[in-house]
Amino acid sequence: YYAKASWPEPQFVAALVGDDGLFLTLYRELYYRHMYSQLHPTLEARFRSFENYCDLFNYILNSDGPLELELPNQWLWDIVDEFIYQFQSFCTHRSRLNKRSAEEIELLKANPQVWNTYSVLNVLYSLIQKSSITQQLVAAQDGADAAALAAGEFGARPLYKMLGYFSIVGLVRVHCMLGDYTLALQTLENVDLNNSRGLFTRVTACHVTVYYYVGFAYMMLGRYADATQAFVHILTFVARTKHYHQRAGQFDSVNKKAEQMYALLASCVSLCPTRVDEMVHSALREKYADQQHKVQRGGDEAVEILSELFRFASPKFITPNPPNYDAPEETVVEPQDFQLKVFLREAKLQLVVPMLRSFLKLYTTMDLAQLAAVLDVGADELRTQLMVYKLRYRQVKWAGGADLLGGEVVPTTDLDFALQQDMIFIAESRVGRRYADWFIRNTNKMQDLINSLETRQKNFIAGVGKPEPAAETKA
Image (cartoon, rainbow, N blue to C red):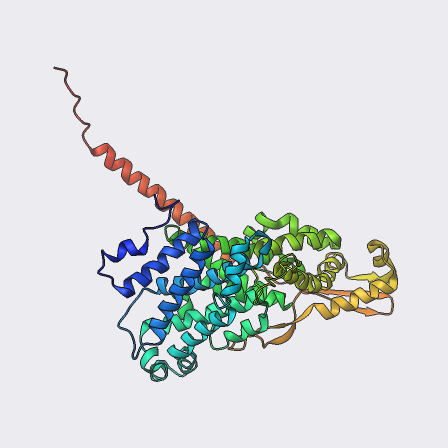
């Protein structure tokens, strides 16, 4: 019934729980979350939801001592995640003044503090500070005892610790939505992404979100090799654990994020060809083989394909400041379009790499004039493109550690060349194919098939051994 209707109003539930303030605050959080996911919230509902979040976070942050409250990690993640989603939804709703009535515009104008960017950032930073999670992560590198000492009175409680940690991930998301990708990566400077037992792995949706935004930030900074590595890592994890999460409530959101990451991975691999995991490569080839081939050919068609993939897979960007309510007819640049221009400005320069690589890998030596004739460009222009290739095929690549912005400048493709006067000498480094993953994956498939057949055989034998039910006799 409630799939297409709102939950019972909180005031009706209050009588059943003895007007318990904390229970009602948590109930309202779920009440508005359901409204956002299944219905179309009104402007008044958006205001009330913000006020309820303020009540919840004020209760947690402004208490005299740590609260005797324990909530599951999944719920704590959902609170932070939904808080940021509703902020993004409100910013989008607010910016479309041509669809708002005069009453709604006046209401927005009179309440600038509602879903204010500074207020949202203040909540996330306050949760981080209250939990001392940054100090805990730094101390954790020296051992568990040091982390416990750095936790303090509030940070020692799971409620504050996990809310602070999830707020770090939330900040990464907010900074990406605002277009500040450098600050997004700096926010994770104390989070060890190589730690398979990190706190972000305790909630699958958080695990996927971290790598999605890290990969996207790398892509927007032009570090396609690092973006590819991030996407491949989490897509391999999702593919291998898919069967365990099909019944979980977060399966749909994780699956949607995975589809978006495949689209972003297709863009990164097309712009910076590199070898990826065999399982991910097979899925990528099934989904985007045609698009990758068109991007590698370059031209306007490649730009169009990259634009389509970006619009499908990018996060929802926001404008931090409210629009001019006194002039709703003014044309405002959509943040989505602006970020697309930023991405394409870098991608157009990078398109030289896959296009030239597709020709150069066919030869070991080639005359400059001959390649220019094949590409239908002048010799001087081709020489310039080759220099651009030389510049672009070397990128800063993260080598591990806390600094996600650091790294070493390394070649990102398996093909290099030298230009001596008018002769091109090509060198390709071939990497041996890894058969281990292929054998492991197919061994697991065979084992699943054997288990399924054995189960059917046991059920059949058990069914044969049972006596047939006696036929009913007619009176």
